[in-house]
Length: 178
Image 1: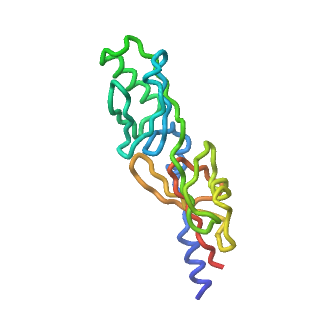
Image 2: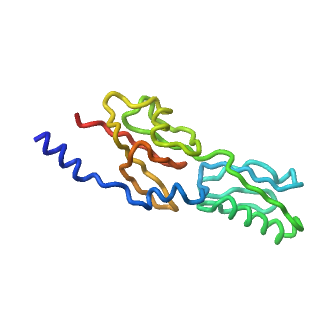
Image 3: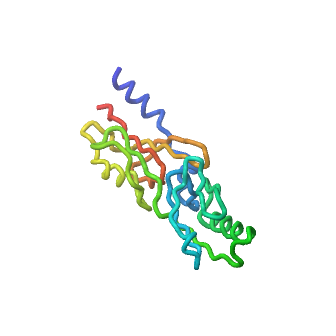
């Protein structure tokens, strides 16, 4: 009976679809929990770091609330530049935006210390698990589950531990069967 259960679990495993992995190669889009550094050259009063709130916006002096969720830093630069220029605040604003801090990743399940961890560009699930204290003695170490949000859609897939993670991902390490 146990063998039949184990084999049934193997049959249900399917590799994650290519779209799940494609998110790694797309330009990074901002979301709540990220912090960006906005630089307006020659305008020290506008240059600052801004946290992206739960609504996906940043609040910039003079121009107010700007929606940045699911936008790239280049798109946000264009929006801020246009608002400063079209609002009559600056004739030729020169704006730069970079990610100052990425949103956290979360590691759960059969790891030494489940919790919230800082994302580092290029991080793999294996490195995230190491940051979370490594596998427990009961952990299944061949594959893990990653839940990823892409433009408002949440998707969970079973993937190898060498899979690259993205900011906001939740990694779940399952208990092995035997």
